Length: 153
Ligand code: DQA
Image (cartoon, rainbow, N blue to C red; front, side, top):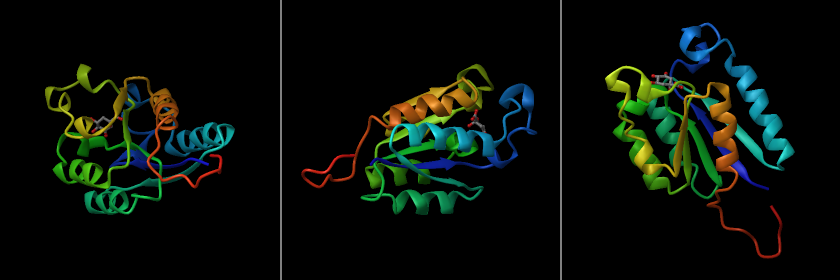
């Protein structure tokens, strides 16, 4: 069974009420429920966290090695600033997929650069909550944990 760690970065706990013209009306709990349904249908398990603290995110990524097959991460504002999160993903060696609700390339110039994207397998952005679903589908194709011979999933 595949295990995926889902990380939501800062301010994403406000989804649904935060700038709905950009981020939509769907709240984080609905996104999480949807992801869990999709994962269950694919025989995978998710661990989901949200944090406003860079250090906490760094620590969770640091302890992901050997425990998760992939990371699905929306680093939110840290996308554009965090060398620490980038280094944590690179050091952990767990394949990662970066997602964003909005199209960061169609917004302010400071959002056009992701420090995280170069250490991820890929990025999905601009599709609202569907970015997460598409990102999870991609993450489910990745795998880093050693498999026990003869065991499925
Ligand atoms: C975001 C885009 C970021 O630029 C922003 O800081 C966020 C959300 C997105 O999902 O569209 O907080 O990651």
